[in-house]
Length: 127
Image (cartoon, rainbow, N blue to C red):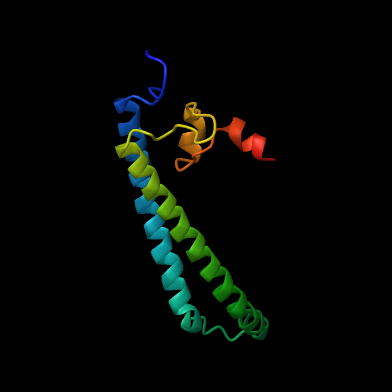
């Protein structure tokens, strides 16, 4: 293999990562829909429970869950955006290359964090 920028995953590897990422995107979009529908239904979540302790807890948690749902939705949208960017890197054949060291990011890391752009080595350098 020639020196220079030829360090990259094979097309076969990229195809496998692409499949993995597309599955993650559809799951993430599904989760986002659930979060959004929970957020919409928050004010009317069908808990016509008459137990007073449950009611009291429910009132207090309504505000909390609205805020946490909103934060969850934002995080989920960012995750989807990161995954879509990873698909673009697959198309460009730059996927899985650490943007700091220029080395390949470990396959196991990419399977766990498919949108990673830093190798563990580079991530540790940031600390």
